[in-house]
Image (cartoon, rainbow, N blue to C red; front, side):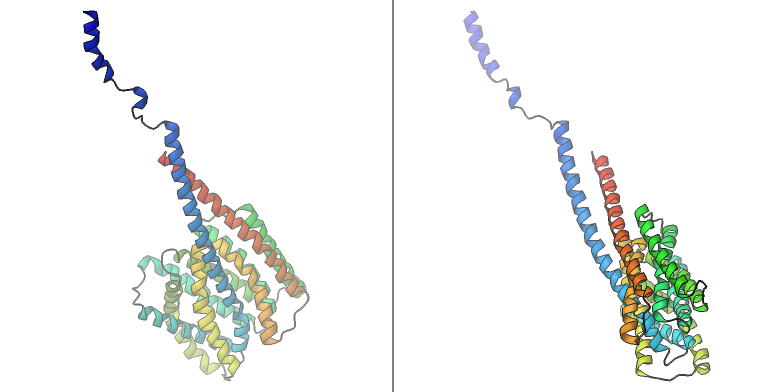
Length: 356
């Protein structure tokens, strides 16, 4: 009987599944490993995209610096044919007509009302204030001297940008930026014999208004294309520019020459429209502070142009000062890249922690 009972119960025993063969839910370690792999892949893709955007932004901002470096020599050419007030007014009128035509052709709608105040700051800084003050300065200063004084613009823009946009560059960045500014100040004092000239006062005023325009334009370029930022700023200043032209042209003599016309065309189309277009796009991609430090290269480039195009004699201190501020570019850009990588790593880590 026991044997029979055992035989009848054996099939029931045989159908019990082997616990080792049953599927198990993934362990915590396996889940964590999979999540980490996904997070690493996402972080790598994000870093790659950010790196590509950073490179293109640096190239665009660099092209803007090249365009700006020709502004002083072109202005000196323009002054051969026009008075300072006429040159600035005509420059703004021509640039506004180019920008307005492009905006109309592209059927760009009017900016939102909340952006007009910022556009007014851009127009007052880079369309009216900086061109006027630097043109007045160039009546008594050489382009090489003015170029190195304007080498303070990167630091001024970085400070205003940090205050306005909330960017927080690293300590290394600020040390390099201050070093470049110190070189510029030393050069200015050495060239002026320890006293500021009237042209330098115009130039320092130009630094402030231009830095404000750059900062506000860089902020706006994050919410609208860079060419629209400068385009609408130019259109906004058109009535003032037309009025200025009508007043200045009868009062200042005009002596047309090839140099004068070429200088006017470049400062209108090259420096004011195309240069600011790529500049604001670059600032939107890599940030106001980091882009601003690329302008440390502008004095050296302007010195080269003033020698080639105007035949100016360069003092021994001018190229030394320009090269010295160039050394600071590598430090600021390196600090900016490292800060960007750290920021992206922290964000990726936080996102991965949220996923897990």
